[in-house]
Length: 144
Image (cartoon, rainbow, N blue to C red; front, side):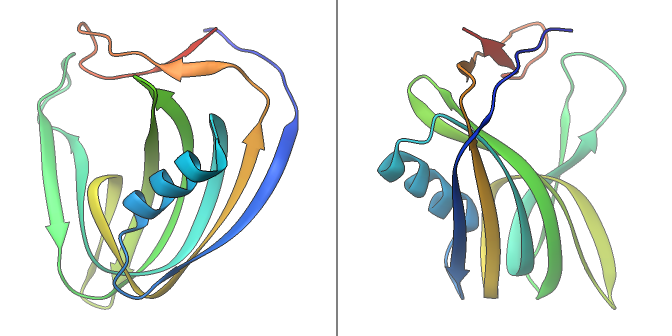
């Protein structure tokens, strides 16, 4: 385990409108506002999304299992923003459900807002970045 302590900086209330890509929108906002480290919560609905719903087996590095949906679902999520190779990397975990079923996982490729998604971002004054680790097959945060 490794950690740093810090404090909350700027706070953003964000509305992502119908048809917009949630991940691309958050990444663009992080670039525009110079957000380097933050955490967020979100709620709303998604019309479609592609997400990782777990490893195929309990091995490291994992073989990811992808899922997607293309029907309107309520969503709730939490995530963070750190830079990887100088670019914002959105790490969004969430659940999406409707009367037809539910899925939960890591939203990675695309998450299209249905009607509206509201995101509340809390910037942190912690110096960290994501660095790819070949053994893990992932990019965990590394403190500077």
